[in-house]
Image 1 (cartoon, helix red, strand yellow):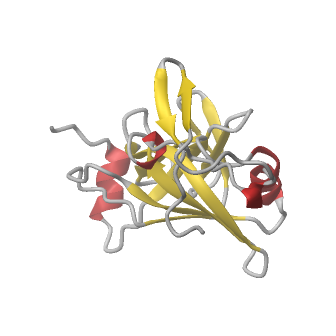
Image 2: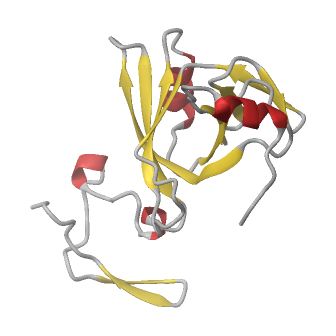
Length: 179
């Protein structure tokens, strides 16, 4: 697949040191759009300047299961509050890579499209890290949440009990590594 490069991208990749920028969209109840290149207007939306680090994403297009991490600045606790209130599991996350500071419509390239899996808050560092999963990989495993005594369920049927649900029969099993 080939594409023509705009003047801004040609200039950026011609520099001695070229560092990509990122546009991140997270599907909270109101979509959060962030940019590592200052405030940016792209696709009719304003992407807010934010401290963004992307790690562990295979960008060569050969990986059948993408995963990685997204670390966002959290010095004002905005991201932490969103994560604590809305959670991140199953929230759609898209990450585009771009060069230059004023992207044309075709400049950013989608490098990750998936969902959030979990998060950790690092208050001393003023950061929040979100683990990323390709939507068709880990998110298809069921259940994503386990019904256990530690989750507040005190009367559980014994292991091996058959449960009919939606025309299918499920057998209760112990979670690996549990007693």
